[in-house]
Image (cartoon, rainbow, N blue to C red):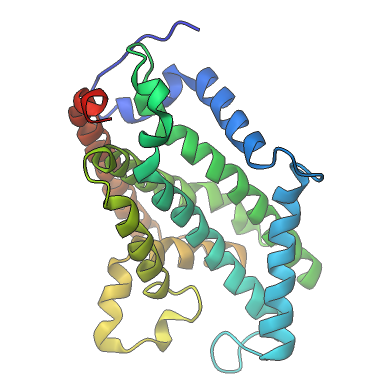
Length: 275
């Protein structure tokens, strides 16, 4: 396949890089997903079985063993597992991309040597692979909620609207860390620690109202917090998104995505020399 090299730093290229090479991205994402399960007996069925098993473990551990509730006297024990699972889906999507980002270029040296290959699509490939597993987990979440309550909230139609800016923010970090990771190899070790810190300063395991009021601003600065809470709001509690906050999140996410692409395009010229 002949691929035209594009080095644009226009904000529109955040989406253009995906659209221009969508066929190639699809092929690489498909190969990436298939390679993850290559050699296993169940193959792609693991992508469905894993989130089901996770939810079953959460339900047993937190619902039946610890008898945990989300807040004081609110919800059933099994619902706690659903709420926890929703937060972990969002965090898992972020962590998979964030932790993988610094090694994207280093792990694809053969593409760096090809002058015509559009390196900026490698973060899209990582995003596509992670998004595939996230969508399956979300489907398990929605079906589990439906099995417990015998209905689903109509507000789930807004789920793509809430998750799209989060995807853009992750893309910005993917481009940025993929480029910087070529020059600073310690970044690969650092992101794992940062990812773990972000997990515990986001309302994944506990409601944000249970955190000390004086430190709550730290949680709100975490980009995971808003998406975790909005995902739960529209899927579990049937609430509409906070449109004003979501609009601001969109603006910030587009800015981060553009900045990440700009850094990637500025640094890519030296990849071949460093590698």
